[in-house]
Image 1 (spheres, rainbow, N blue to C red):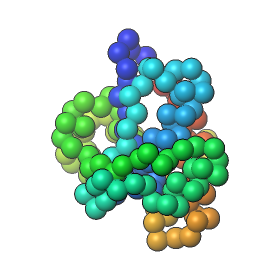
Image 2 (spheres, rainbow, N blue to C red):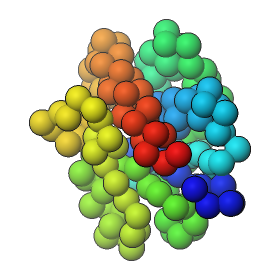
Image 3 (cartoon, rainbow, N blue to C red):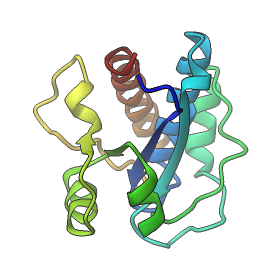
Image 4 (cartoon, one colour):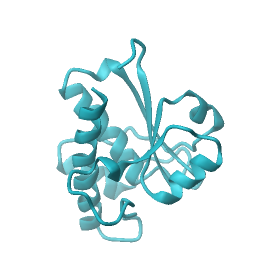
Length: 154
């Protein structure tokens, strides 16, 4: 790890479901590990659908069920400044990865690359049009992936 904080952002489509989970969970895990000061952790959306809105209520509920607080989240769109300033952009699916690379991002990785369950599908499922149980499944995948990501970065 460098001396200055490592800037990492989790990126999905609208920044209200998957990427806020990544941000909230990774921040909590880093705090729990005593390394939170080594990171600047954000999340963004590739599109501007929900800018300024809180996370999807099902995201907040799923996070709360697991002991995380996602109530302060406000959606933001990925900017060129974000791409230039972040050390690592974590794509929640291949579409996000493609968009970021198309915009010139160099350090982009899929979150599932860190999933110890090695899912056959490299995309984290988008639960937006699903029920609350899908949000819990996504949270579990994001959590185990973030644990492995934190280990890899520390």
